[in-house]
Length: 80
Image (tube, rainbow, N blue to C red):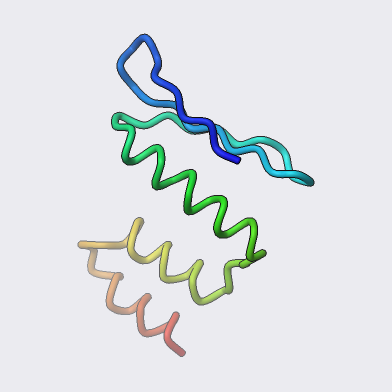
């Protein structure tokens, strides 16, 4: 279950507590981002989806290598 609250700084804090797992909390600049993160975390936890090596590789390429020369090469390796 998610708890979204406004902080004195103007940011929004989302805390998700699910049975059998430790509570997770994260701060966002808008309430919509906080709610989206909480909804996504609840959906993943409830369906017990785990990341595959492919999704982890693609996430790494998109976040760390985007715009670099090695990006295209890394995508080819991940797709194999």
